[in-house]
Image 1 (cartoon, helix red, strand yellow):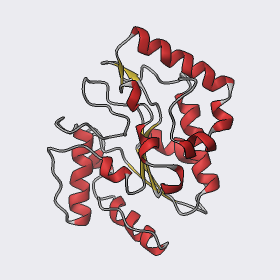
Image 2 (cartoon, helix red, strand yellow):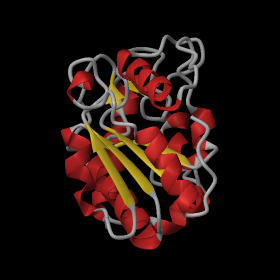
Image 3 (cartoon, one colour):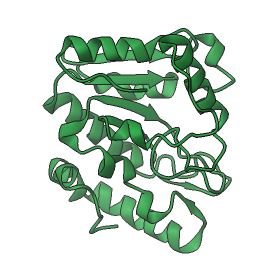
Length: 222
């Protein structure tokens, strides 16, 4: 991972952190985990979010916490699953809110969100890897520092990005965002445990598009 295959605009923007001792320690940990454990996503998908949405293209950021830890689900984009995999409950709730908010019909059998990434939606988890069937197993190993650097770079060097922060974890991580330059929308997490406490009815998808339109940017086809 030391010579990581990271999309060139991100590699350039994050080069300070990529050369740090923190990142060196993280790469050693993750490399060893892949060699000795079953880890998701596959190595080739670890940085898919960045490969699919280069730095200059980012218009919206959705921040997840941890990759899915069941077989066949995680593929490097938060909340997304591969084609043919049943969308997990949180993603189904996201679809329900999109339908309610925008009045558009979603395919609840398809949880593959790559189309969003190609429109400028960066779908990142705070932690990019996880052991099979062990949620949070790669937390506090250095990924949080990496994704903090990503968020700070976007906040500092871009304007008018929409950050969607769902749940307390994402809200805390979003405290480094400059809210004078960007739109930060916060709500409860779409998990079945909390969706009825403020995710349903948040209207983040229409608010995002209204803001992008106001700033002269193309709206997202959710």
